[in-house]
Length: 440
Image 1: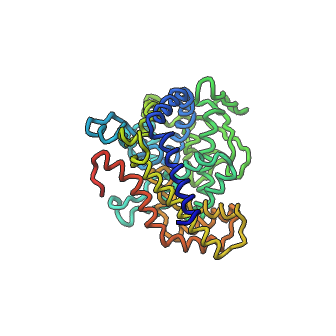
Image 2: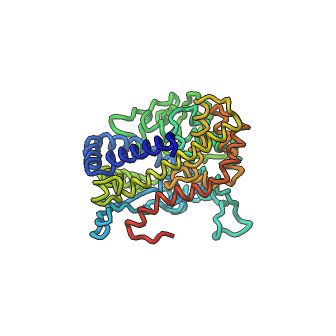
Image 3: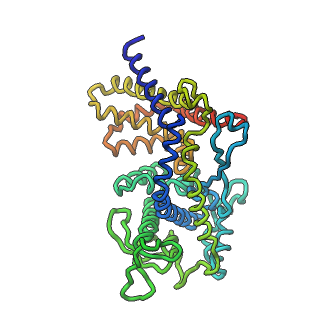
């Protein structure tokens, strides 16, 4: 065995031990539990700030693009939990987390009928007629979104705002993804500006049932109207803009002068289209916030889950540690393969650029092989030419060479599907085994 390989194995074993001690050991779980106590108030504040923004931004996409609420992420990403039974506990199950579809994840038509005033229901519904659903709609009476485009609208846009608070990075990510899918810039621009307005108004322009007491500023009044308020926002081009609004519905899907595109908005009346007595919108948000708060204190058992007593004591016996180690060894293998490739096609590259190419390949594997969904379904839904165009264009804008990226992708795609399957199976197999669920 070569000295370099032995050093790599020693380093991997050290990392596995550190991972086990910090997360999966008894002391590690207790330490994480105490940290949950320490950050509880902070997490409540953060949830009050972030969850409503993505909730109402998701509703905006639903109303603009005729998407059922049960289809939208993160709106439909909801979980409940329970303590394990004795058999599960003996297998190392500390907590059982189960995915649920919340009651407020309705069809778009149901949502409109529940929350919109009756006189405005049909005009709004009339603008959404035409979107087809496979196996439901009649041929010739509907149009269909390509799957990857639909994934982009239902989850990818909101994820970009979560991942990239920096405007330049956010726009670059949105542009690259939209171009690879053939989505017109006007749609991306409109979606971006609406989400930007919704997020900004949460703290800069108080709207009933959306603004935060003692945090959100009162809206600046429009000079020619005592009812309208000004929502400041940063548009797709990075310019400071102001929108005149009356209600939350205006910035969600209403036409706003010089701020929205006529083909992607509704002409709103001079009153709120939501029913004053309908609480479904607000109650659903409160329910989502409460579920999140109820899950904060199960962070420790959730992160340290599927570990028996003997496994918590000895990291060599811990299957979760071994799974993590196998994933890390796969990462090292990928980096080695990229290094060999670069030595052959571009031996003159410096270490900094070599690291960027390795990171690019790891990103490709990660995006296609994510087990959780929010925002990553669009990459799984792409066909090979779309995925290649997105990945090559994204990293070309990061300063890498397009010709090298083209060759690297053609090299990677040979083993990418099998590696993604292995990555996903490793991540889910242990959970299914410990919960006694058959592995398909």
